[in-house]
Image (cartoon, rainbow, N blue to C red):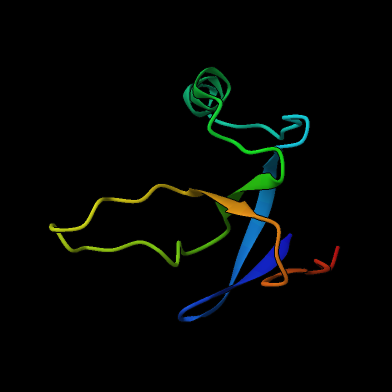
Length: 85
């Protein structure tokens, strides 16, 4: 699990795909196929899946709806978080 600094504070997510070698965890099949087909994941990027509330979710009909995955580069805004077992 990781914490990522978002405008409203820290949000919890998990890394589900690595851009370097496309290693992945269990993903929705359609999402996985789209990423591989369209090659939308950069080598130095990762795909996150939000745990709990999606900090980018919105109810504004003028904005594009968001999904539970986010593509991002690796940066200092991402912090590993130890999850108690």
